[in-house]
Picture: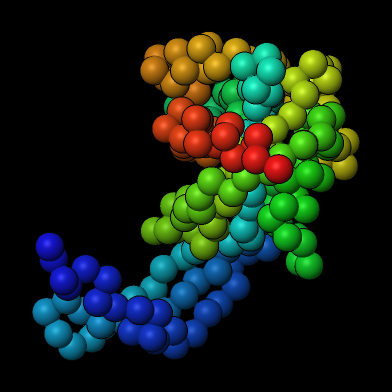
Length: 208
């Protein structure tokens, strides 16, 4: 076992300054910092531009009675450069605004993006989406829902959302994972977590 893993903490980083570069729908900040080195001493000054979009939640709705997920489909400009099908199959997600909890955002976004409600909400994991260039952390949840209520097109006009709701059997979702039809991180991670922890998850939902 390597006892030197995680020898450093946030105390071993010195941020000497930040400078706002851009602020629009998202914002970008330049950081200047030094940090301790594995071989001893400190690095020289480092400058990095960091994409600041806040932190987010993503929630995978599942109906244990029909064995279906409620997934959504929407256009993503970031997929246009590498995909001939930039309308992505995703899970419900949203930014955590100031004063909100992750759980609150899960319930709000479920209604806004899919028109559904949750009976159970389970925290799966939390991860950094791309820490080399953004501060964003995403909390992943899995929720029990009634998939028979999921249909139609949803989203907020004020956010230019145009979201189509799909009921997807878990066998189909698993096939989409295997063949790459689902290719965005939060959805892949949530589905993989579900298939790894399904029995334990469903048992916890049945516990009073």
